[in-house]
Image (tube, rainbow, N blue to C red):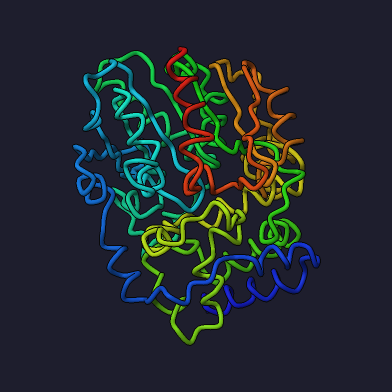
Length: 408
């Protein structure tokens, strides 16, 4: 049945997007040279494995949230090329369908985590509930209990981020962290600091890479379809029990088998959602990348974004009129109070981003309580995923991040 749903989603996507969107999808990379055996080998490598293979120290910690999710934090306490620590702690939070691997997967010369560590930062990388490193719970089994997956990025911002940040502060003894987030890692930050404004003082500065708050003008073909069918899709997914969206463990299995008609969608899942730039993608990185992404998420995370697209609001999860009244005492979910985000925030965006459109970024900046700067990446081809995987990110984006961090 799950196979049928993804086939249907694949068909809906190609049947409903316009010609220009179809051209975008057809431009996605080919994976003919990547075998499933190679994928499985890459999947077995963990973030600590990759870090240590580059000659950097690696530490792993687990922290349990108030609602029982067991989250994994990865740490590079100091870069191998750093002369000494600068006494600052950097906290990096990944985007949708991703993990802490995003910050190190491009290697020691290009990965932001390595670059910050070599600058003397103590680098911590979070993992949101439900991805391959935080797919654990004190009482719930993610493979058997659908209740495990009853969360969106709201819970990641309201519960996971505060839990991880408090752990990092206690472990390091510093009063605040230097926060960089990508995509959903920015969304969850705005959720945290708007709902729990006391956490603003725990953030020295925040850099939003491809910031996602408002999404009215995004152009992702798949998310456009999800937004159009969001109510129907949620009912269908609930009826047949599809709670998890494309975990890494599914790669090379039913949906991505050599004879599967959904193989292209599965292998390109992240690109179909977020976009792709041929000029920025290093083809030799693809086997490793495919072994770690998509890292898994709940279907509600994508559905929550689809609601944002449809409504034009940045607000809490819409359960429908009746349940909304019970949960929020209102027929409609409340907007996040972005004016309460008073930590200094810098927004970095690009013109070829399918998800973080310039108009939406401008609106976000206007609503935030302390938006310091909007910075457009000086590369017309730069896309949503290029902040993590792009070949020029270490030259066009990361120096700006380091400059912002060093100035605070």
